Length: 276
Image (cartoon, rainbow, N blue to C red; front, side, top):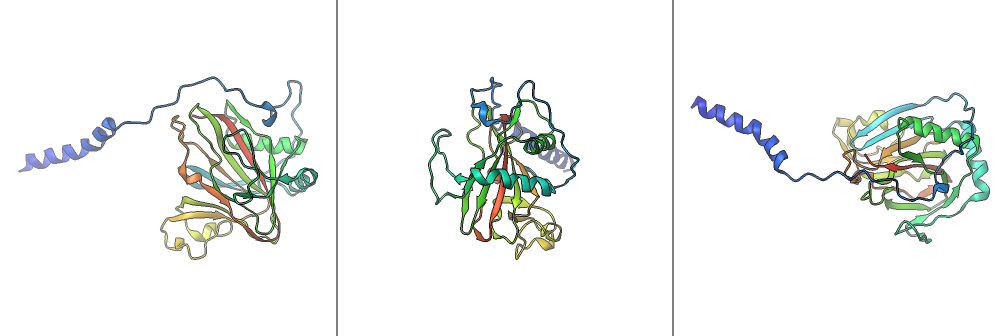
C-alpha cells in the first residue's frame, strides 16, 4: 500500500511539468530590423543637440499590478511643467481623430471626443521625455513618441481601446503613460481599466482610484480599476507581454470615462520600439 502512495505522489509531482512540456507554447518573434517609420513623430534629438538643464525632480511610485506592470506615480509633473504644457498646447488643440489601419485617420466623436495637441519639444518637454525614459530603465531600441496633450470638456470621453496594435513584426507601442496636467474641480473623467485586478487594500488606494462599493476593504482582489484624474500624477503600464511573442495584455483595455463637470487635460507619453 505504501508503494502505491509513493507512486501516486511521484505522478502528481511530475504531472504539471509534463503537461507544460507537451502543451504548445507561443513562438517568439524573430529579431527583425527596425521597420521604416516617420521619425518626425519620435522624440529624437539632433546629433549636435545638447541635453537640457533639467531642474531636480522627485516622484513616488506605487506598484498596482505586476502582470501586466502598472505603476502609479505621484508628482510626475511639477506645477511649473503643468503650466508650461497648458501654455504651449492652447494654440495647437484640434479635434481628436482615430485610425483603424494605422495610417488614415478620421473623426468619430462616438469613440473619441476630445481635443489633441502635438506639442513642441521645448526644454521642459524634453525633461519630461527624459524622465519617462529613466522610469523605463533607458532601454535600447525604445523611443519616446512626440508628446500629446488631450483636453476633455463636459461629456467628452474616449471609448475603451488598446494603445497597442499588432506586435506581429516584433515592434510596436510598447508602453504608455497617462499623466494629468489639469484636473481642478473635475467630476468624472476617470481612466478605467475594467479587466485589471487590484490586489491591495482599498484604504491605501482610494486617494487615486475609485473605491466606492468595490468590496476591496476585506482583502479580496478587486476586478476593475478606475484612476481618478489627479493633476501632476500619472499611471504607467506595459502594453505587451515580456515573453517575446508580441502578445498584448488584455488587461490594458482602457477608456477615458466621460467628464461630468469641469475640464480635464491629460498628457499621453507613448514609447515605441522593439518588443522583448
